[in-house]
Amino acid sequence: MKTLYRASKVYTLSYPAVGEWILIDDRHIERVGTGAPPHADRVVDLPGVSIIPGFIDAHVHLTGRTIGEGHDWENARVRDLPQEDAIRGVRNALLTLEAGFTTVRNVGARQLSDIALRNAIRQGVVPGPRILAAAHAIGITGGHCDTNGYIPGLADGTPETGVADGPAEIVKAVRTQVKRGADVIKFCATGGVLSEGDAAGVQQYSDEEMEILVREAHLTRRRVAAHAHGTEGIKAALRAGVDSIEHGSILDDEAIALFKKKGAFLVPTLMAGEAVEEQAKSGVLKDERAKKALFIAPRMRESFHRAVEAGVKVALGTDSGVFPHGRNAHEFTLMVRYGGMKPMDAILAGTRNGATLLGLEKEVGTVEKGKVADLVAVSGDPLADISALEKPVFVMHEGKILVSK
Image 1: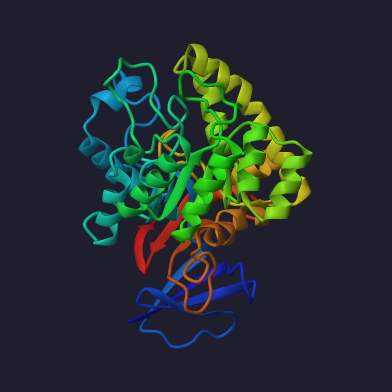
Image 2: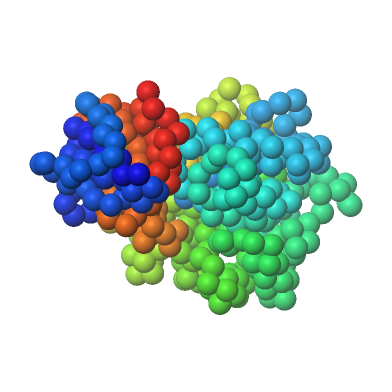
């Protein structure tokens, strides 16, 4: 059955740039245009709204607890069953989809819980966005992708669970994630804010180790996302050929030039910076974590502004899971506020650019003939008020309406 949706504006992010109606045939877009619409079996009027492609978040952690969730949340890794992680993921996936995010990249999860969630969504068992999953994120012993502070034998990692040192273990770790079903490979190039025992800006993995990891991942046709806060780690990861830098908190001129030379994307996660800064000030984060949060957050914003001014390619990513899910669209607002982005550029970062980074540009990211019918409608015009994207009134995923207010 063909359904025609009429709105005040349809931002196609393609050509023609703006339309007034979209014709949907089952789960795909058949036509988009202006003027007299074609015949349809059903017509749905959406007056006063703007339609844009479904949002894409290139950096989420859907499974497991969010920061501060529940009693003794800091020790969830050694207290919660992996099945609990996946069950929470079902809740979080629905919240994310209802917020307009029809595609996400899950960049690291425990015990393959993101693979299980992705598969359940694909099979129609539970509702949720399209997921590209990384399985276990890969990192050095004692680094940001490891779990520190416990007695020997408790929470110790192996290459199978992403903790790998040296070429042989790194290759084993990459191949194991691929074997378990990973769509993308994520690794930690520097320390992080929420880990213990490592400085957020310090490089983890040597240049040679990064090159081996990226080469192996690319041989399997998996793209590589590198968690990186510190300058030297960012530059080493870019030289190694990663497809995206996650966070990118401390950039210098050389790092920005490398982004442009290599054609890599920056996934800035400004919401994560905002969240950990607030958590440090409120006492949710304490001691070492709080100090790192207060150090990184303002530098993340400054670096993002510099990257935008220099024309670095940007794809929206939030690090949802550091804060509660379903708020992801606030990242659009922060990109305009802190990066000086024009609203349309922010929208592109969370749609077309995200599709390109994830390798899904033939399926999603724009409103045009043949693309999957992933659509979001908001009241008014997001080019006049970017925060309108935080309150969708209509969400369609693969031709099915999930939200209609």
